[in-house]
Image 1: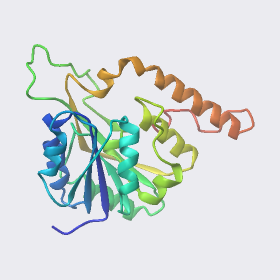
Image 2: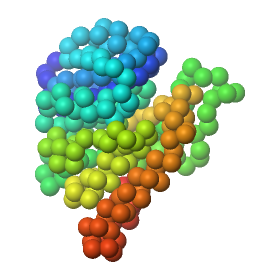
Image 3: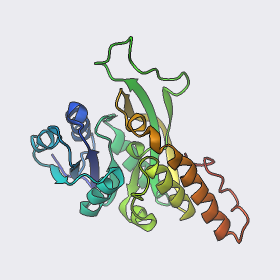
Length: 243
């Protein structure tokens, strides 16, 4: 396999059930990544063993449990590629995800990052009678998610690492900061990320942390008011060009 310019970071915490499928979808890319780093956040199941079973270009790193943002940041600090991509341990990439996004960035050298659409699916092992329901109208949507992103590594570091204070919403916080930093984004119309809906998604596990969203938005608004001398910055309404 010819190594490519992309470093892929896959954080995992007790995700052995789906991890092998996620890694396989990264390895199956028509534009193969140069490295895939599975960062195990102190799992107590067999996640680390699953990752180690793949061999190169998959690198398995185990660290004490520190939460999602710290786990992602550790992988980013180890990354050596010119581009960064992220994949949750329970999600899947379409096989031409990286090739389409690399082509988009090469065709648009002024752009810093590119997203794609996401298609949600209910994990097939679930009994239909108890499976979560995907609300109508969101089966396919613009993917302002880390798993739908490809970004130039230099552009990522201009914004900075993920903020570990947020249990959930750390990517929303990061992308709002990226907008404030002036990063330029593209959105591809194709579905390139398949997001698995199951009974243990992070958002379900961390329901008590959903107040993070309101605090993240408030911090972004305060930051933008400060940057504009007390008035909201033009075009800075959260959600206008992002989440």
